[in-house]
Image (cartoon, rainbow, N blue to C red; front, side):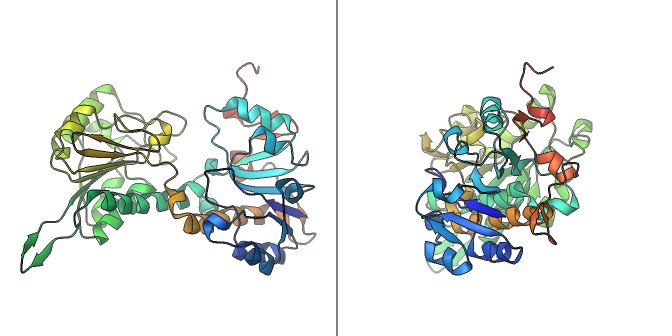
Length: 379
């Protein structure tokens, strides 16, 4: 069996395999091909891959030729998919929501596309959960970027020249990214508050030493899906929560927004009026900017400044610490590979009725098979 790791298209700096995971793949009896330069932006040289047992090829075509499985970070383009063997399995972050045409192209290329971000939230899939591994790093990096843009110290400092007051940090959305942002901001000495519509997060926030802020009415108590995701709240609740947040945000130095609902545009949490109410020098980091953003005025890939308030819209936040992100993502892929390989025969043995496979398989045998992404003209 052969696995290929092609180089990602610009500007993606992450890579889908590391020397550590390649060594583990070799133990499984897998032949590994890597495109030259695939790991450079994650601090991995071609020589490191060769030392781990991989074969490095000068071009993507040579690297993927005849491969049974292709590991990628981002969904392959139609041109990339055309280079893969028909019937090959491709594991990647596929970004399927709203991209049905791209999924159809993958189907027509004859590949079996698996979307890593659709991994079910079950115990046996925890080590394969790329949303968690990458969001955790995004939350950490958001605080580091916020501290850099803030231009002031975060912790309280008692000095002979006077006292430096602690920065006030507000985290909006307490998923994996939000929890890591809280923990990181607390480690840096900030005074942290956080909000989320899911009642279960209150205890998590307080366990990290932060204060929880929310309108805790009856709707709030039932604002979580069985899968652990946030529900979309009513207009009435949103208005009450917005009023509470608007008053709170005036006093904050740094705000980090992380709110996303799978398959939907990011909810708007911070209005232009709220931004205008903040003190000059304050910083907002919008982690949802790739899905339309939580902040009015956020610009993808840019830092917008409104009345002295910086709105940071960096894309691919996990990719801003590519070496660590790649290491975790590669482990996610390898753990999934283990359930796709027969350890006796050393060959692929995909159990298509497995709950993990059913949850992440998008295309197979020339068709889009995932029920949530069927073509609109399908019966």
